[in-house]
Image (cartoon, rainbow, N blue to C red; front, side, top):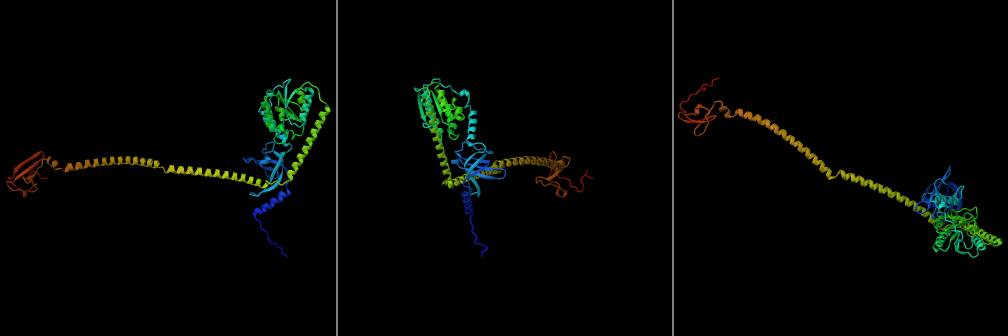
Length: 454
């Protein structure tokens, strides 16, 4: 019996792929609640955040396609319920949730989006009473912006036909729910203003869920209503339904039928059964369509998304971009510090500083040289005075001035120092302190001179 079966060695990538496969297969659709933290919204349009509770955290990613469908804005600290699938981000070896849908916990996503937009537009004064325009008492032409197949158009036409069959009506057909419906409604309001035929506009649709009525809660519709030069009556859903369009309009009607009654104050009524049957048919059609859309959404969720691999690379691109930006910032900071250090070193080695130091040293040497020269001259002067005194004491002229004379043979000029050098009758010259005299030797005697005894 082999107690040690042959081991199978996996690479990190292989192991990570196996773990990812297990997670994606067994946790394809999960609902998780928690609090948002570390929310990041890069330029790619993806959303990155952490979902946490008191005991754990998990990373979450919602890619651009899903994030664009959100009706409200995510914020740190917001508690949400998230639907998604578990997977593994290979580069970090972390498991995470790829979000497909989320809503605020305890408060529907559409209700939160409605409240956020309502508060923002109210701060701008878009709902102020002073902006409301009066509805004309007897309009000649009424513009109706709604679905051509909905219950609202039938209700409005029924009421107007009963009350005023000759009234001129201009219908601008638009979609009133689904993607792009809000943009169509806003464009229709602008076009009706450009035509300038209508005296008043009715914008609305029949009843439905908050999702069905959401096109009339879009900002683009509210701004188009506020910018309209033609007075606008909003007639969305039932009396209990209040939309952003109702708040921005010049007048809110509780229902489309009520809107027609407000525009046309007196005319005959149509048969109630026809209106009721039409409304019931439309409601049944709406319910059928809603169920069909729900089944389609469920079918879409059950399909494997071919963009999963692309999404992983999108997340990797965001990570690499963040790393590159951080590395570039660090490189620039290091280069800046190096430039500053080199600049400081160049300033320390600048020839100007060395020239200034040499100039200062030269000035110091000049001062020292001048002081030394003065000292030398002073010492030389003193030595000269001493030597002059000594020379003066030893000078023959000084001796002569005391009464002595120098005898020299004439004309040879030989100095006579001893009597032996003299010859009787010889001519000599006596050098005195103030002149000379020529004499002849008459007597020669040896011994000490007369008068010079000590």
